[in-house]
Amino acid sequence: MKVVVDSSTVMAQLGEVAVWSFDLEAWGECTQASDETAALAKFSQRLQIDRRELMVTERIRGPRAVFSEDLGRATDRQIARTLQAMDAHRAQTLALLDAASTEDLDSHDETVKQPAWMSWRTPRQIFHHIADTEARAYPRWCGLPQLGPVDDLRAELAASATHAKGVIQEMPRYFATEHRGEVWTPVKFLRRLAWHERIELIFLRRRLERTRQR
Image (tube, rainbow, N blue to C red; front, side, top):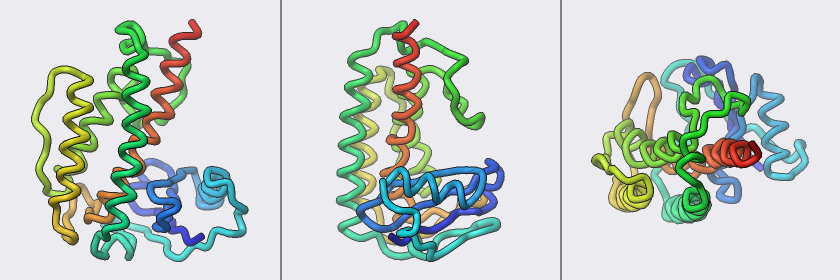
C-alpha cells in the first residue's frame, strides 16, 4: 500500500509525524507518532497489514507543505468514500449521545489520556467539537460556507452533518487556499473529514466508559 508522510511545520509544532494513504481502502486513515518509524508501525497495525507492505511515496516538510495528491481534482470516488465514512461515524456518535446522561456528558476525568493540544475534556465538548470542525472550522479554512449557531446538541450534530454533506457536493472540485501556514484543497478537505470523527470517537468512548466505571 502506498502511504505518505507528513513532517510539515504544522505537525512539527505538535511534536509528531503523520502517515496517511490516498488509497480508497485506507481513505481517512491516519496515524501519528513522535517519528516516522513509529507512525508507520502504528499505521500497519491499524490496517492489520505487514509493515513491509507500506511504501512511502512522498514526504512533506516545512511551511505550507502539501501532498501532491492533495493538489489534484476531487474525484467522485473520493467524495462517495468520504460520505460513506461520515455516515458510519455519525451513527456511532449519535448512539453514544443517546445513551449518555447529562452527568455523563459533563464529566471530566483527569485520568483519561489524550494529546495536550486537544483542549476539549468532557464528552459534551467532544460532541460539540465534532460538529464544529466539520461544519465550521474545516469549511472556514477552505473558504467554504459555514453552519450558523445551533443550540441543542443533537440538533447541532444533525445540522452539521447535513451542512458538511451539502458543502462537499456543491464545492468546486479544485481550489487551493491557505490558513495559518497550511494549504487546503478539496481532496485534503475530504480526507480530513473522513478521518476526524473516527479519531474523536476514540476519546469520546474512553471518557464515557470511564464515567460509567466510577
